[in-house]
Amino acid sequence: MTSSLDITSVFRRAWQLYRRHWGVLLLLSLFVFALPVAMLALVAFGALPALFALVAASLYVNGAFWYQGLATHLVEQASEAGDIPPVVRLIRTSLRRLPVVLGAGILVVLGVFFGLLLLVVPGLIFLAWWAVAIPAAVAEGLRPLAALGRSRRLVRETK
Image (tube, rainbow, N blue to C red; front, side, top):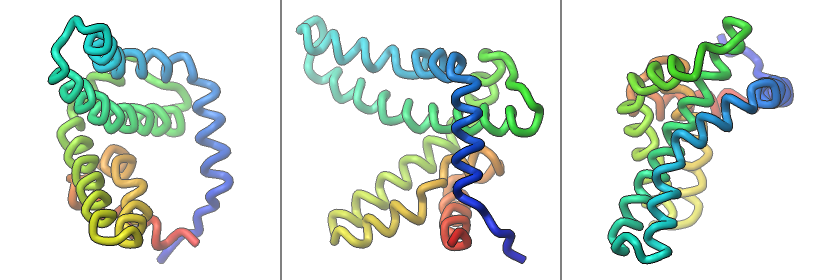
């Protein structure tokens, strides 16, 4: 049995939680993105070799996946418990799921990249199918490939 999902109410609730916990989200984003941004600044000023720009870019992209997992966990905790755990516990919990989050993120990027490389349309289809793969991996405790399948089912069921 497929339950109906009201996208408007999902987005409204998510934005309420983001507004309510903006300070924690800002602190988490500083924690995740400070190192890659600092590395890019040092490369720009010539203090680090240009090769470090690739390392920083990789850290930044993987940080984006991790941050999506952190934000999903925060929203999940706020929805279930009514409040969020301390930042340290959020980070510690998300670190346990980090390999799955990175795996799902890398699979999404590769699938969309090769889909766009072949033709634009397959890449856009993959992007739509796998739009919620990382939240599915975090919220439902799925492995990367299972998260891609769950994301596709969630997107297909939402009309």
